[in-house]
Amino acid sequence: MIAAVIAFERWHTFEEPLDRDVATYAVIGGEMLQGRELYQDLWDHKPPVVYLAFAAARAVVSDPTGSVFLLGLLCAWTTALALFAAGSWGPGPPAGLWIAAFWALLCSDLALQASLPNTEAFINACLAIAFAALLRTGPRAWDVRLWAAAIFLAAAILFKPIVAPLALAWAVVHVCAPPEGASRSRAALQAAVLLGLCVLGAAAVGAYFAATGRWTVFWSTLVVHNRYYAGPLLPNLREGLRPARLLPAFLGDVLPLLVAILPGLLFGLVRRWSRRVALLAAWMVAVPAAVAAPGKFYPHYYQLWLPPLCIAAGWSLAALGARTRRPAAVTAAGGAAVVLALAFQVAPAYALSAADWSDTKYGDIFLRSRDVAREAGAMIGPGETFFQWGNEPEIYLYARRSPPTGVLWAQHMQAGPLRFILRSRALAQLSLADPQLVVLSRDEPPPTGALGEWFKERYEPHPTRVRQQKGFSFWVRRGGTLQRRLLAQ
Image 1: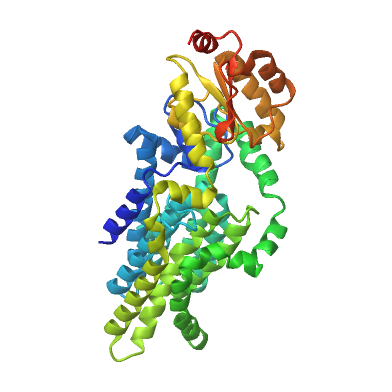
Image 2: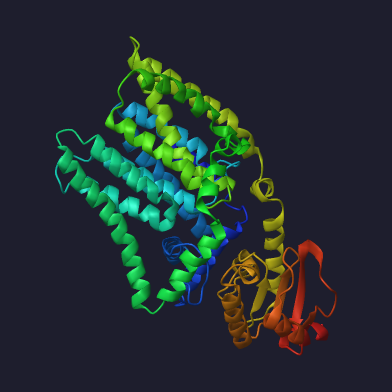
């Protein structure tokens, strides 16, 4: 039933236009399957694992929308199963089912922009699996569950390094509160394995790019550019501690969980914390730092709160029930009340169409870019290509065309420490591809420098009318096949 609820939620938004982050991953994943190299050609500033995930999905489902749907559904289902496994440890399976039910109602939350699989969806799945495995780790030094926890924790870090402090926090708790039957020294050895595999995963990725001759661009992308993108860390963390950042309005749908957590917080003040509670507390302390580290505070960053809050609410209700004469009935009543409250919170969103979801989250930009993409795709003939100047790589997906340059965002060519390198790379690739059409977004200033001169020399407004509707304009190659075809019409 929980899996069916999740599937319904995802299917309801199947036709929702892709946002620019998810579209970037989908474009790069699809182009990687054609042999184009990440960072050296295809450029974005996330670690490589997310693009590999989207490439794998495109290999299974060639349709971009279908592949994104598949990834979102698999992430949500995997997280639900992992939360059930984690939540059942201690209170038993009923608590695990309530926790998974809480997740099912929130995993596509409109306010948190959770209906599409951004990197937070993958991170939540990996961390939930790691947490469930770490709870079950026994006293043996080489317990397979410890290795599973380390592998999935390392995977989460490779999706976004902002969760790396959680690895250290869990290692400290593991040593301070060892598994039952394990000595402190044995727990320290296990913690070293946990941290060592996380470091080894990052080192292996770096070694691969060094071995393929892409170390310099790998370092400049993930370190130099991202240091510029995030800004100074300490001010970001201080900003993240402000009440308006800790509890923004778009977290309103989780209010029933916060109410359910209150009994657990009160019990935690009067009794010693167990190992499982200490591990959960470390997770919850690490989330605000992970949200604040990039310095942007976008709503989808706050999806990282959902798994630990669901577990905390379920365990809190189980602890409350355990203090009564009818623990099962009290826990069930509390869980049902939270489910009803969550359903009341999220249900109105499902009266909206998929297009309305996009408009509510971002405005009409991705609806407009989808319409423009279809118009551009109909205009371009077989063997011809076009270039979009803006931050809307989804235009390539909907038009069913490969991007002539792997630099997909105008923003990256306009600002940042790599702007001159990226602009030069784009100019070289565009000069070779000779696109017949350029789609300019009015949200970005026109290209400048040598790239701007290239554009002015070769392109002129659409011959039949200057198209400015939907915030975009069409420019055709002067003397090109598309221009001749349009003039003939």
